[in-house]
Structures are given as structure tokens and as C-alpha cells.
Image 1 (cartoon, helix red, strand yellow):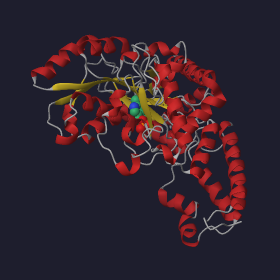
Image 2: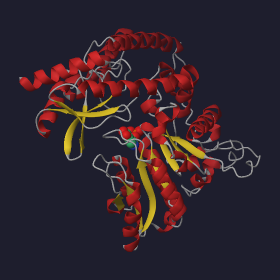
Image 3: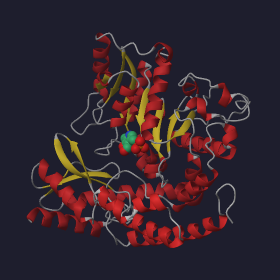
Length: 482
Ligand SMILES: Cc1ncc(COP(=O)(O)O)c(C=O)c1O
């Protein structure tokens, strides 16, 4: 029955059932390798295929129209569940996360202020505490009145709409620690961030957004694969000081976006602690390896950092968006955004967690709910095992490609990211990728590392196996031979 709120619970049930059935079919077909991985039709053709102009103008009057639209939308959608999906770093999500999205979409508890969604707020705190524990940091304290145990520094963190925003938040916290006056007076031009050239572009974007200018992003000494060289950090620091500037933060990768390699966090961390310099670790992609006993060795020393970015929507089987920025010392987050809008925070501070003072977003989706549901249904062991399988499969794929004449691999993988190339120059690699993309059976990305262009795969799907890779390599040979 249609109510005054515009809600028909009957239509909701009917349409909901159609959606669930269509999605279940979509996932089954994709997992069998049916349908194109991605459809790269031009926008105008897709607008026509989905009949968008007519539906916008005339509306969707029947269930049949709804179902037809849904079908055409899914036909053109990118299939992450397809074994040939080897491209961008976004999770093949567990359905529990999607159910979280559904619940959030109906409730719309924009939970930045506790009263706007107390259950979602409590979940965010619990999830942050779980992530903190995996890093080896203390929990937040959950707004408890009890003083922390002697010698223990409560950790902190917030969930954010993506790793880019998490990186920006970490750098803002670093700046608020070193130069809190900047919030009011503006930047003075003497602050510098040291990061390897292999850092994700969101760091340069953050630095520019903060008004520091990209010139203030100083390249950390790195090897040819983009890994930071800790022994050379002291020289880089001295050069910054000689130029009359101050290092606001060092950023390290765990792992890098292009090659999927980890910086030596133990050594970098020890150096930063000794110098009393903020260390931010960008673990948007690779921090999830912390869950896996063996693979976590690449992150040894991460607890020496001051802040860590960790995306759940990359390797924690959670739908986008869901990222976290975590702090070893939770107090560091307090001065990051030095504002107090009384109309949203007054009166609720004491009751629970008002996230609004500690995050960039005003309204925020209940991001923790979907991660929590995945965690509760898959379990920590399930998540760890997913990481282990993807890492192991990527090592096997590396060996398979390395053994194939005509193909070259960049280096043994340290995560589920792998760069390789086929005979020919850089332009040939781009042509291969574009041709495969047009054909639709495989989706790869590309990356420039060590001054050369590579085909790049991110193995996000446990169904991607040696037979998928054999078909891919066969097709690359055929494409180049055409
Ligand atoms: C290392 C690293 N940092 C940050 C990001 C940005 O994360 P998001 O896409 O969630 O904004 C990415 C995305 O690929 C990444 O690989």
C-alpha cells in the first residue's frame, strides 16, 4: 500500500524479490565466465540501450519496465565475479556487505552525530577497535569514563568514504600535530611531506588540496621498483632542513598501487620514531594482509607508524565504499578538524561518539555496518583465508607467466598485484590492453614502473586460476600476431 511517505511496502517486496533474483543470476553467470567482463560501449549507446531518456521523461510504470531496465543495466555492468576480471583494486564483495548497503539505504542513518544513528555509530567504534587490534594498537576506549590502564595510549580512527579521504585525514592530523596554528592562519610554505614516487596519487592530491602545493611533496629515495630505501632517508631529511623547511610526515606504501610492493616499514618506522616524525602508512590495498599470519610479515613494524589507511572495500570483501584511517594515539585525531558546530554536536558529546568532529564528511553512510556483517558472517579466519588464497594464486600466476616464452614479469609479487609484459615496446602493451578490453573476455590495467610500461593484473577473484591465465596468454599472443 502506497503511504504518504511515498513508500509502498508491497512494491518494495516485489521489486526487491526481482532484484535479488536478477543479482543472483548475474553472479552465477559471471562466475561461470559468461557475459563480457566489461562493456565499453559509448555512453550514448548505453543511454539508448537502457532507454534512459524515455524512463526519465515518462517514468517506470510497470514491474515489466523495471525488470527490463534492470536487465539492460546488468548486461552492461562490469563483472567483478568473472574470473577474467583482473583489473582495478575493488573487492568482489560478500553478499553480507550488499545487505548492509540495503539496510543502510532504507534507514538512511547518516550517523556522523550519535543521535542520527546510535547503532551504526556503536558498530563503527567496534569495527575501528577490531582494526586497531590487528595493527597492534590499543582500542579507542569507546568513550568510557574509565581512565586507560597506565602506560596505554588509546588508539583512534574513523571510517571514511574511501582511502583517498583517509590519506587526506592522516595528513591533516600530521599537520595539526606539527603546526596546529595553520588551521587558522593558513599555510606558511615550510612544510614538506616525504613519500616515494610510487605513492598513490591521492597523496599528491591531498598535499595540493591542503594548500601545501605539490612541490612540497619531496620524493623519498627509492629503488628501481619504487620501494623506499630507509638508509637514505637521513640524507633526504638533511636536504629538506638545509632548504629551511620542516618534514611534516613521511609516507610509506603497504603496498604500492602499481607494483603491489611493500616498503620496509620496520626500518622506516624506527627512523621516524628516532626523529620524532609522523609516519603515515598507506595500507589502502595491502593492510588486509595483517589478518594472515604468514603474509603479515610484509607489514612488520607497522605499529611504529602514527597513522594507517586501510580500505575494507579492497580486500575485506566489503562493497565500496568502506575505508578506515587509524591512529596509534587517538588524541592525534582530536585536533585535526578544529571546528565545533554547536547545532550538530551540542548535547550529544557525552552520550556517545560524534564522529563529525573527527572526519571530513558531514553526513556519512553507516560504513561500519557492512564490514561488520562480512566479519560476522565470514569470520576473521575467512577473511584471512581469502587474502592467503589471492596472494598464493598470484605467486602461481607469476610463475606461469615467467615460464612462458615471450613474456616477462616485473618481479615476484608480494601481494595480489602483478606486472608483466609481452614482446614489443610500451605502446604494444597499451594496444594489447585496449584490444582485450574491447573483446570483453579479460580486463587488465597498465602501469609504468622502472621506466617501462607493464600490463598489470590485480587478482581479486579466487576463481582466477591457471586455466584463466593460459587463455589470457594465448589470446595476447593471438592479438599481437593478428
Ligand atoms: C595505495 C593506495 N592508496 C590509496 C588509494 C585510494 O583509495 P580509494 O580508491 O579508496 O580512494 C588506492 C587505490 O587504489 C591505493 O592503491
